[in-house]
Structures are given as structure tokens and as C-alpha cells.
Image (tube, rainbow, N blue to C red):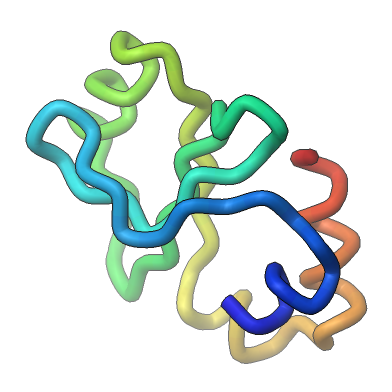
Length: 80
């Protein structure tokens, strides 16, 4: 969350979308539902999010741990 705050990337953390929790909503209209997972993507959750008007984005724990802050920031800024 610090990288989001420091770089003025609009977000909402730990949001429940029709009964399903996502780690972050990002974007000017908060249209990106971002999950950071240590497991495979949940296809049913993705369908649920799309049906609710969101674009699901997933990062694995491995990606978060191996990307530099700069690489992560580039990926996040592309969403906003």
C-alpha cells in the first residue's frame, strides 16, 4: 500500500464486491480489482467480478517478491 500512497495511485484496500473480497480496487474509477494470491486464480471469482463491472488483475506472491519496486510501479501505473 505504501507504494500506492507514495505515488498517488488511487486505490481502496480490502473491498468486498458482492460478497467476494479483493485486495485492492485501482484506477480513476476503481475499475480494476487486484488480488495478490499465493494460489491459483479463482475462475468463479473472476467471472463474478467481471459481471459486477470490474476488471480482475492478479499478482502472485512470487511476482510481488521478485519484482523490483520500480517494475511493480510501472505495472500499477499502466492500470491507472
